[in-house]
Length: 506
Image (cartoon, rainbow, N blue to C red):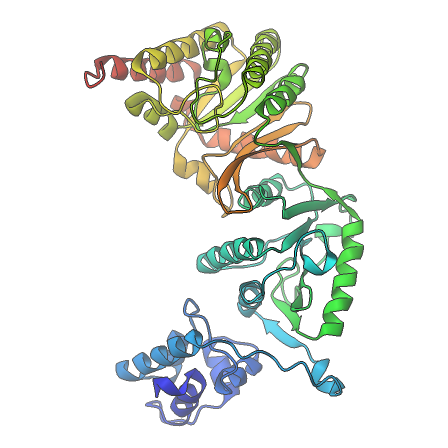
């Protein structure tokens, strides 16, 4: 029975089952929590089968009171159908207007699943800088599209897949005053920025009393020539629990034209600060922003640059980090900008607040293994005992000498829990200055899929405020003993003692 496909197997079990009732599509839909009876009919007609990570096979077994053997047969049929190649739709019958103009209705958990399948089934792209090769995705709703953890993983993988296939993605987002929402969407973007084919933009007009994210949910996904979907709220105002999907070429074109109108009302979300081969430009940009920044907040997977001894940035003939490739002239310019950063900090910290958040795991890696974050162009990924002791002793000196400088050590799990489901990437450095500049150092895939360093900047006030709020919320979650000055100095002194007592390194 499994080889007959999921639909045939399901139809047979609906007719003959241990519950002793002939189940019809409406009955089954109600029994397994589906509002759309059409999905049941599509399953029975073998148009498709529910995904393996969906709960429907289990719910069907419970509703029909199937035996263990029958449940196994149903699951085997489901896997068999999913393994078969999808039959391409016949779009040659253009004369049948009724058939070609029909939409597919989406409800409940089927909304996210349908959008994911659209991306997974997309063919190869045709090249960049072409409307016909640009996928448009919007997030104008207040809340994100509801997804299970498994769906979220598939969603991320599907986005990566279409980028590798040569598509561009234009992601149009509506900003609002919710700082957590802003930081959440930025963190999600960081997984895709790097190759230049993922283009986040935001609407230039902020939501007012009756616009933007204050409106009931409504968003769009358009894959030219392939499919398009509109998702919207049906019951809960800010949750997209319903949608309409079409494969009709005319309807796709109409929605693509609407997407272009939406994009005309947007501006770039983040600016690439410098190409990976020009680190001096990135250091210079941060130095210029910090010159009169009146304080800043930093999240880094390691201790901040201002804790490192100034003599580390004296003139050298070549980079000390073997993982960084640059000319001697580029290296000297990096050192100059870094020394100017330190000088600006020493002047500004006398009047303004500077706070750093560092994961405890990074401090432990430095202490026990000499490991430094890979995004630090000035310091190699491994440092000797002597260098680590120099660093930690200078960090204590900076804390002693500057009341406005603070370090908080956060547990990794606490950092992750503050990112509202998107995952706090501990290898991503970001800082926000008091005057509204956000700098992000992360890693993104290039055209070949290899990770490369990416430096990003924005001065958008709403984004900066979102990062400030997110940082302050994360700071407040840190236990007092991991952020109070005297306690932090004791943590660093204990790290020094641990290094000094380690007899494994000569």
